[in-house]
Each structure stands twice: as structure tokens, then as C-alpha cells.
Amino acid sequence: MTDDKIERKIAVIFATDVVGYSKHMEQDEDETLKSFRACKKILEKLFEEHGGTIFNTAGDSVLAEFPSAVSAVVCASEFQELIKERNDNRQSPINLQFRIGINMGDVVKEDSNLYGDGVNIAARLEALAQPNGICLSKSVYDLVNKKTKFFFSDLGEQKVKENQFHAFDLLLDPSQKRTIKSNENSSVRIFTAVTTLLVITIGGLIYFFSFQTNPQKLAIQIDTPKENILGKTLLILPFDNMSDNSDTESMKKSIVDHLISSISSTVMLNIVPRQKSYVLKEKFQTVEDLYRETGASFILSGSALGSEENFRISLELLDVRKEKILWSANYEFSKSDLFSTLDEIEFSVRRMILSKLTMGEEATQYLEKHFVNSEDFLEILRLRVALLKEGTSIERNHSEPFRMILEKNPDSSGANYLYARSLIRQLGAYRENSNVEIKDIFKANSRALELDPGNAPAYAFKATLKKRFQLKFDETLLRTALRYGEDNYLVLETVADVYRLQAKPEEAITYYKQALEVAPYGPSVLKLALFASYLEANRIKDARELAKEMISSDKFLEFWGQLCLIYIEAINGEKISSSQMYKEFLEKNKISLEDLLRKIETSPMARREYWVREELIKSLKGIDG
Figure 1 (tube, rainbow, N blue to C red):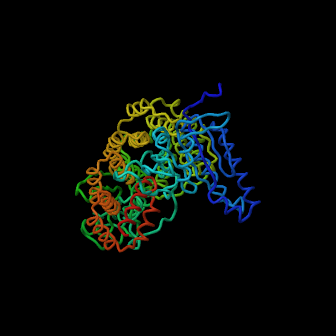
Figure 2: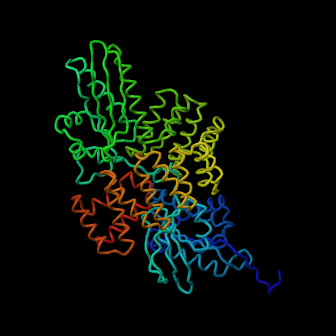
Figure 3: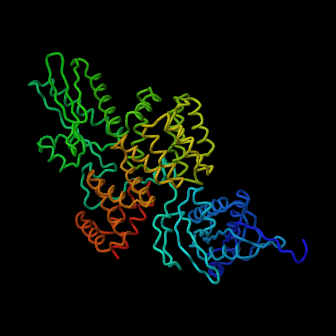
């Protein structure tokens, strides 16, 4: 190269330094240096893994070049998480925090060093970043937004010293959401923060990844099922005895007790406890009174008629809000065969709930096909309920029950698929601390498809895996999943989630709505997913209508629907109406702002849709002043 020739190129620049490095040095120079060297080793290892090359260091600052914007952002996120883990484990008396800025732009190469605006803006972004934070330029954001699992916050146009640029925060944690005065006069961009949703299965995600036990209760809560996670409650009333004999009385009581105890752990409905059911039967005579007392969406009632040797059971399921009979059935049995009677009625009632209310017929058939053994079938249902209904924590051994079922059924396509789903939930919950290997997730799901090429949910899940881990959107897989399972709730929900990952909210809306048509009383969190999708698509009117529908749906969703309406009023600038609605909400529920925020933060309902959760919290704090 001649002396007068200048070599220029476009490069991705990664800039980082330590927060408060000088103060740490004043406090304990030796420990600060030891801690920084340890952190730098972590960074250098990550650079090696992700293709980063250091071209300049100065004290506590490091500048590196990456061949890919995605690689730089992933590297930055992993570094911040590892540093946080190191600090949490107190591996050093000096806990260092880092800021990171990433830019893609024109640079000048001179020997092994890089100069120019591309480097300068990366340094300005680093200065703008929060402690433990990552700040990106728009050029980087535009490349990584649709190719990664991350959430971002639009900071607008910023000016630091002589450089002006459009900046974005990468949100490693919802608490990092902030507002910085922008040099633009444009309105706040509400929806750019919502870009991805992890598996749902992820269990998005935080559906999938950060459940807690024993959520805080509202002050208004009483010991009734309406305050449980799902909202939809089934009241199984003691049957009427149409015969004047003690045998029939004893048998119909045994059937009711068995139904309540056996079904409650296997369906996505809250079941009124047995003792309370008997008290309610004695105390209240009308459906209106029972609903007012329990908030029950459905009532299963029945009658028993007995002769000397046989007896007949008649059952009827009522949709309380619609005043509509959803199902009825009659059974005739011999009094000498009570245990078979209990099993048959239990099976029929549970299947009716699954197919007509909480899963839909096709998803129910899917589980029945892949888990012929009744014990395995019931265990799968219990595990599903434990995750989505009870909000149990995802422990390190979360996948173990699914592995044990797979061990019993190694050639079951469904068992392999569900094991893969359990692995990704466990991985999402623990990330770097997880003992899950990504290759094992792919392997189990591939095995599911190998055993059953028509396994529709496995195709949809494969699309999730490709999008999350390979950054590839494979719409062909989604179409294949829908071809094999167009009315399968498990397919529709996952397909919708993948479209949200791809930032295609309109498509996500279509399939969330189809899932709700198939299983209208499935997990209530799906309503929040649809609400968030409406916001992402800027369909405020539809979001408002959905919030109103939630309010009129049941006692549980009423809580969330009211909050969503308050939020919509707030983002639309309706300060007076949002403030009034907020005050009425607090008064009606007899709750303080502090307790309300705690309820929102800890609810499993909002853990999947944590963007909605954070936006609700921010708007409520703003209204409260």
C-alpha cells in the first residue's frame, strides 16, 4: 500500500469499558486489577467464539471488530450475563460492571488499528449505555432486530459530543427500559420495543422461562377459585338423589368426590374444592347466586336414580355466562361395579372438558394417539397443568418427568416432542447455568418427526428452534404443521408465536384467534398474547375491544382487561380518563399501587407477556405520579 492510499471499509465495532473504574482503583487497586483481568479473559474467550478481533485497548477500555452485527450483539449479551453471574456469585470483592456500545459504519484501517466515525459512534454509544447495558446504533438494530430473540427500546436521535445518531437499548432485563430525551420531536414509539417472543413454549417465554411459586395475593383475595391463575372455574355440584335409598346417596357422593379429586390436577380449569361444593349446594339455590359467590364459569350438575341392582347417572354442563348447556350424558351401571363406574365417568367428563373447553378435539386426539397408556396420558396432563395453571417454578430438573415418560415410551413421537419442549423451557429458565444442550433439543424433536412424519406440533416447534437458534424463518415448516394440524391448539399457538418472533403481528393475530376458537377456555395468557399482537400491529381499536371482552369474560380476566384499558387510554394521551379509570380500579379492588404492581410483577399470567407487564407498570406509575 502506498503512503498516500487510505484503506476504508464497513465494519461492526464493539466498544466497552468498566463503569466507575477509577473509583474501584482508589478503593482497592490490586483487587480491581485482578477482577478486570478475569473479566477480560471472559470477554476474550467470547470474542474467539463469535469472531471478534480486538484492535485497541486502553486501560479498562476494549475495542473489537466483528464480521457480523448479529455475532457482536449475541457476544455482548452473553458477556453481560456472565459478568452478572460472576458478580452475583461474589467471585471477587470488587464487582465490575461494563457498558457496551455497538455500531456499524465506515472506518479507516491503518496497520492493525481502526479509526473514523464508525469507531467514534461505537464509543459514544458505549458512553450512553447503562451499567450492565448494551446500546446499539440504528444500523446495527436494523440488522439484528428480526434475526435475534432480543427485545429493544428505541431511544430516538441522540447527540453525544460532536456525534449525532439514532440509538437503541438492548433489553437484557425489563428493568433496563428507560426514556431519554430525544432530539426528535416525534411521538414516543410505543411498539418498537416489542420485537420478539421466545418459545413458548416457551414458553416465551417468560412464559416459558421465569415462573415463580407462591405469587403475592391481592388484599381483596378470598379463598375462592376465581382468584386462581386461569380464571375459568368449574363447580361440580353434589348430585340430586332421585331415589329414596341410602345406597344411591352413598354412590352419587362417591362419584362427585372422585370427579373433584381426580380431575382438578389434569385440566386447565380451577375446580371448586369438595367441601366448599357441598356447602354451596346447601346454601345457594340459583345459578346467579352460585356465580356471584364463586365466579364459576361452568357448573356440572347431575342426578342419580337407583333400583335394587342398578343406578343411572345423568350429567349436564352449563356455561353460566351464556346460559347454555354445553354437554349432557346418561350412564347406567350395576351397583356391584362401582370402581368401573367411577373410572368411566371420570374419563368422559375429563375428555369433554379437554375437547370442548380447554384444548379442542384435535389436540386431545393428538395426546390420546401418542400416549395410549392411561397413566402416561394423565401424567402429561398433570405436568401441563402444573406449568400453566399453578405457575410452578421451572427447576433444573424440569425436564426429568418428561424424560422418564420418554424412557418408558422411547418410540413415541409425542413423548420425544414433549421432551424437547421441556428441555427448551429448562434452557430458557437457566441459560448459561443450564445443563441442557441445544443439540439434544433438536435431536429429540427430529426423532419425533422421524417416528411420525405427520406430527404437526413437532413441525411447528422445529420452526421455533430454527428461528431461535439458527436465526432462520422457515414458513414452509409452519405451513406443513398447519396442513397436518389445522385445528390443533398446540400447533396454532406455536405458529402464532413464531410469526411474532419474525415480527409479523398480523399473521400472529390470525393464528392466536384461531387457537381461541378451537379452545375458547384454554390458558388465559393467550388473550394477553393477542392483546400484545394488536399493539404490535398498531391496531389500537382491536386491542381496546379485546380488553373490553376480557372484562366481560370472567372475574380473573376482568382484572387484566381493566388494566389493559387503562393502559390504552394512557398511551393515547387521554390523561383525564386514564387517571379516573385508574382511581376507580384501585377503589373497586381495595388495593394500593404498591400491591397492584407486586401483583402484576409476580403473576404467571404476565410472565409470558413481560413486555405487556412492563408497559402496564410504567403507565400506572406515570398515572399515579
